[in-house]
Image (cartoon, rainbow over all chains, first blue to last red; front, side, top):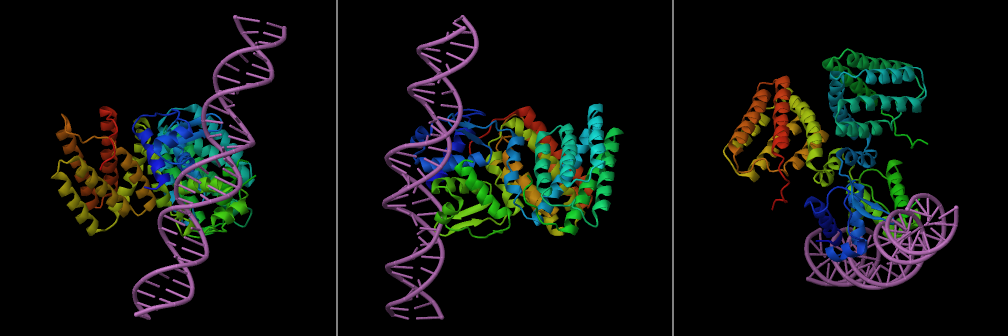
Length: 232
Length: 232
DNA sequence: GACCGGAAATGGTCTGAGGACTTACGCTTC
DNA sequence: GAAGCGTAAGTCCTCAGACCATTTCCGGTC
């Protein structure tokens, strides 16, 4: 087996076997090299691999540690790769988001949480009164994120967040011919979701969320916008 | 900015900017080092990071390439990290699987595909006639995988597959007091799913799939099995 | 034209050295 | 005695150079 792969397997097994639990500290690099039988370069490449996946963390001057192994945190690491997926693949991912967020919205509607309703109402008020693309994206994320969080499953929140982040790289809300029509439809979609949550109607909430995201998919398919450079 | 991070950002931007599309070849390492202003070690660690995420691939003796950037392939890379998540987190993930696979099963039921039904029936026949834990897991995976594939969204198939693979690390089907009861319930659950698909009833299919996976969640919560070592 | 062997290109691994950051400890000071 | 501070040890980070392993390509041979 190749050196880096051997180191990778060794590190993974130290965690998988339970020898090192969440947040545990690894031995220093020289010791690990000796234990695994590879050079420091190979070991470090293996460490970087697992760090990229959110499984371990290196802290300069301190040591190398197992991460908290929190599923939401690990899923969030996907944004590094998901953000590079071309539009075709993003549409596949949006179906995942539609299904998951529809479910989370239904869960949120099933709960009795006046605070959530007030916060969502506030977000929508601000959202409806702005035409700034950056602010629209920010408030939209806040709205959906609050609902998913209320849904109760952090993993779902993280996953939908990653996908939404990728979708946000495409400029739907760009000044142009369709801007006003799109913005109005989007605003109405948000209101429909909030109404369903306010009336404690999970089925209506699921439908409204599903329709709202399906609408986004349609716009992406129709407009085929190009990804924009990173925001400031 | 640290050297490795600088290299990482540079590589990502080469892809994000469209300068290098799917399957494109990177310049040789020495050239990249020069271009990015970092040493070869730092560059290689950055390359390993992106390789771990399924974004790029190094081929010994040939070169370094952008991957196909296929969402399903990228999601499959998650299994490396998901397999290390403790039971608590796995239960959160199983809710994701339940929702997604329920959706995919409904989609499969909505299609007219006699081939699928025949194949699923064959799998279930074999599944019902074995008590070998390894074979049970294999056939179970084949059953669910065939349904998700028929659902039509490869991303969903990959995601549910990753989560199912993690669940499979826990020995539910272990010879013991409850083995027979659990096996029978599981078999009935599979039949219910196949029946719903055969009768082209998406709603029933979604319900059956959801109930089947919810049952798995209950078993995991109740039995709290320990992860088993890797299979041969 | 097909096969084969060697040379070139390229990533993989190892070693050694020095730098940068964090942490802990002992000292000083109040 | 407690707080602040500086030093030293521990640890990861980066660089440089050399050599190995694999793939690819090209020319020669049959």
